[in-house]
Image 1 (spheres, rainbow, N blue to C red):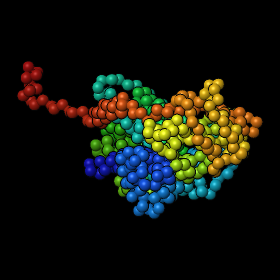
Image 2: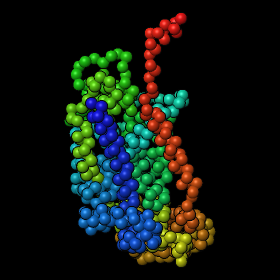
Image 3: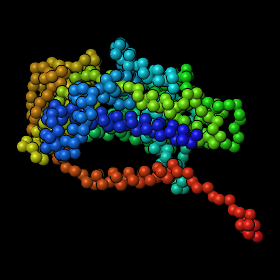
Length: 498
C-alpha cells in the first residue's frame, strides 16, 4: 500500500515537473531553430557559441532525426501547459478559446477540435489538470512545503481562508476585459500562463519578468498569507473545470460508510484547499491530487480508478495548443523566419495601434568578438486593434534617443509576412524609442539595448545556487515528519513521579 501511495505521489510530481521541462525545451527549441537556420552544423555552433551549445545542438538534432527532418520535427513541440503542440497534435486552453471566439465572433474548426482533449480529460478525471499538469500548482506546492518548514522553525504564519469563491466572477470579468482589449489580459490573470509565458520569454529573450512577477506574487501569498487561496477561491480555469468535473468518472470518495474518529482531521490538514473528504464535503472542489489518500492512516479514502495507471496514460497523451501567426510575429516558442538569436522583445499599445519589436544580435555572433558589435537587427510589427488586422502598408520609422535622431528608414510594404525588418548601428547602450508614422498617426515604442549583454554576472551565477540550496533545505525540512517522542518506561515514569 505504501509503495502504491508513493508511486501516486511521484507520478503526480513527475507530471508537474515534465510540464515545466516541456516549456523550457520549447523555449530552447526556438534558439535551436535559429542556429539551425543560421549555421546548420554543430561545429559552426560550437565555434560561434561554445562547446556546450554545440553539443546540445547536436544532441537535439540527433533526437529529432528519429521523427523525420529535424527542423520540421522541432515544430511538433511548441507551447506551454494546456496550450501547446506535442508530436504535432494540437490542443487549446478552453478559456483562451472562449475569449478568442467572443472577441472575433467566430470559432475556427481547428480551435474547436483542439478542445477535445481538455474537455475529455475534465469529464473523465475532473480537475486533474489543476493538480497534475498546472505549473502554478507546482509553485504553490513548493510554497506550502516552505511554509511547513518555517512553521517547524517556530515562525507563526497566518492561514487566511474564505468560503467565498469568486472563480466564476473572475472568469466573467476576464472575458469582458479580453473582448474590450485582447486575450493577452489572461497573461496577468492566470498564474500558470504568467509563469509559462514568463519562463519562455526569460529563456528566449531575457525578458518576461513582469509575467513571472505575477506568478511569484501569488506564490508569496500562498506561502505567507493564504495557502491554496488563488486555486480554490479565484482561479477561473479551476471554476470552469469544476463545472465539467461534476460529471467526471473518477472521483475521490470514502471506500465505505464507516465513520471516521471525531478527533481525526488528517485528510483536511493534507488538503491544499482545507476540504474535508472524510465527511464527503470535498466535491466538486476536489482536484483529485490524492494528498488526503496518502494522509489517511486507515486507508478509507480512494478513487474509483487507480490513478497511477491513469498518470501513465496522461504521460502518453498529446496535450497541446494551436500556435499561429496572428500578428506576423512568431508565437509559442519558435522564430522560424529569423536566423538570429533574440536579445530583447518589446510591445506597447498606443491609441488603436499595438506595436512590437524583436531585437536580435546580428547573425547570432558573440558581440565581444564581432566586427560590428553595435549592430542590431530589428523586426517590427504593427497591429490595428480596432480592425483586428496586421498593418502591412507604407511605414516611416525613426530611432531616437531622447531628442537625438539615431536612424531613419522607410518601407513601402512589409519585408516578410507581416513584419518590417532593418539592421541598424546604435551608438551606445541605453533607452531608445521607435517612432512609427503610420496612416497619419505617430506610434511610439520605448525599448532598451544593452550592448554589453554578453558579460557574465558572476554575482548572479554564484548567488542563485546558494539561495537555491537554502530553499531546498527548508523545503525538505518542512516535508519531513517530526520525530515522535518515545514513551517512558514504567521504571522511568515511577522515578519521575517520585
